[in-house]
Image 1 (cartoon, helix red, strand yellow):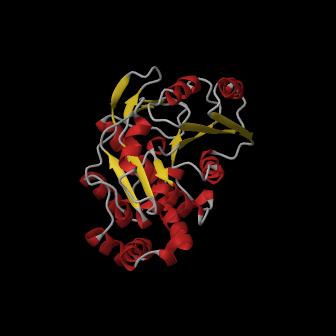
Image 2 (spheres, one colour):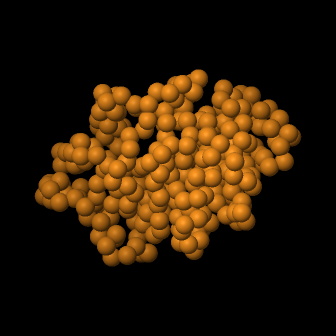
Length: 305
């Protein structure tokens, strides 16, 4: 069986870290190695990690200075083992079902190991006590580069990738300030050159609490409010544009003609009113739902960010 290395970034995660580590140790798939990079925690996270490292030989921990969540996961990707068959990304505050890794490996084993491949899945939303809140929206249209340009459906804590995907991502390490989140960057790159598998079933509990770096709204009104906030107040379209510019800079010369055209048309759409009108009418990128598509295109058309 191919070994799986779980890559966990921690930062002041004492509240829920033990539960998460316990769920990783209960995985039915073997062998699993857990590699933790602590991003300069100042609470009891370090003591918890040292305790688990002493008790479990398959846990490795490095304590490093604080650099932030995106650089921390990019650093983990670089430091990951070349010998592991698959690499799984993990947050500090969730809870994995025992078959999470097993299900991902079953899907990834269907792909030639020479092809960059990445698995991601739907998640179940829970509160701080792991009580059910709801399900993350189902992405019925599925993964594609045309989707990755404007939307991320690969929640980081669900991602499992093969070594070919890791090698692809390490060809060019992006400027972290241009990346919205590490998981979106992974989705964008792998969808451009490899295979992304989206599992409509959840195998983990995605905890929603005040300290989340990124959370998820689960009510209809909440999701609409969040969408407008992200586009207008948080200038999400500007960040999406910057991320795609960075991707074009690093990987543009390797894209096939069709995908390069998709990316070029998106980047050029903001240059003029006519360009925005054309993109509103004939965009070849898409978000997973019709209402998100409308919001996305309207914001661009009105040049609101």
